[in-house]
Length: 240
Image (cartoon, rainbow, N blue to C red; front, top):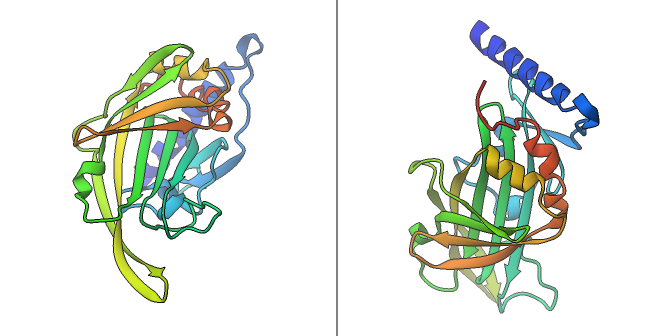
C-alpha cells in the first residue's frame, strides 16, 4: 500500500514539475477542462456504443482512481457515419447501434509512462461479419502537408469485442451483433511535436485493418486545437 501511495505522489510531482517547466519563457501551460478517473477510460472490456459518458473534445486531466493524483492528460475525439436504412431522416450514428452505423473514437494522450493514441472502431454490420477484421493495424494522418504514420505499441494491444443488441424492422424485433476493434499506437517526441504544431483545422486520417481494408475519416478541429495542451504534459513522451 505504501508503494502505491508513493507512486501516485511521484506521478503528481513529476507532472507538476513538467507543467511548471512549460511556463519558462512565457509558454505557460493551460489548465485541463475536466477530470476523469483513470479506470473510467479502461477499454479492456469494451466500451459503450458511441463512448457514452465520455467528455469529447476537451482537455481531460486523468486522475489515479485510488488517490486522485494526476497521471496525465488526454483529449477524446469521435467520428460517426450512419448509412442505415433503419435511421430516420436525421442521422444519429452515436445514438445506438444499427446496421451500417460506424463510430470511430480516438484518445490522444500523454501520461507519465509516455504518449499514445488509442483507437476504437465500432461497427454494426448488415450481415455476418468477422470481428477480427475490424482491428486497426495502422493510422495515417495528413498533418501540415506531410503524412504522419503511427504503428501499434505491441502485438498485444490489438483486440476485438462483440456485443449483442436488437433493433426494430417495422413491427419485428431483430437480434444482431455489433463489433469493436481496439488498438493502441505509439507516439514519440517527434510525432508529439508535429501534433502540437498542427493547424487548427479538420485533419483527414486513414485507418487500415487486419484484412487490408481501410477507411478514411475526419479528426475534429476542436480536438486538434487541444493537442498542444495534452502533449505538453510529457513533451519527451518517455518515462522519467
